Image 1 (tube, rainbow, N blue to C red):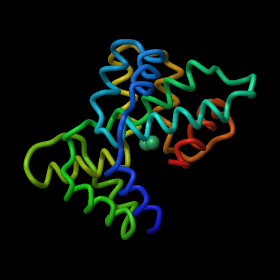
Image 2 (image 1 turned 45 degrees about the vertical axis):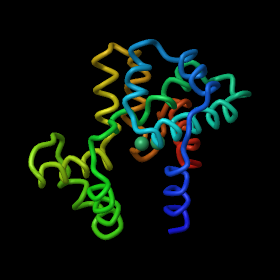
Image 3 (image 1 turned 135 degrees about the horizontal axis):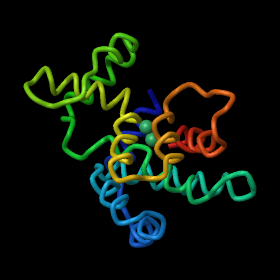
Image 4 (image 1 turned 120 degrees about the vertical axis):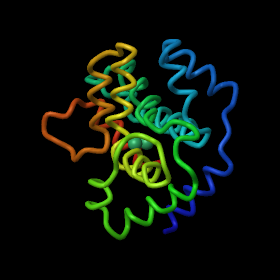
Length: 175
Ligand SMILES: [Fe+2]
Ligand SMILES: [Fe+2]
């Protein structure tokens, strides 16, 4: 609960500095940048915080491809597009997460339309945005390693996970 309040507070106060914009421009291609800027401001802030933490964590890990890691951190949540989910649907989704997660995950369906379709869309984005982020990246022919890491970021850890995915998950959990 405290975490939720903290998340809400940081969402309300989120901002992006000139240094942040330069960081995004330095690490992403033009097409990747437009996907990044399609997110809500709080999601952009979250992705930047994840990228900075991931960078700090991976500084001395020789097995990490820093380019792949930073792109994954900045782009992992691009499946959450600005204006796609209303605030009330977001609230309902968070409640569904605590009361009936496995049903809510299955009930989600991609695609906006009428009131009910929009709610199912909100559920899909909440639980399965990794798949959508990966699809967006496939559409712009991003490196396959990046596509797969982004797709897996909310899946349970596996033995053969690439090291960049392990760092991404850790950094994501901090923010
Ligand atoms: Fe995510
Ligand atoms: Fe995230």
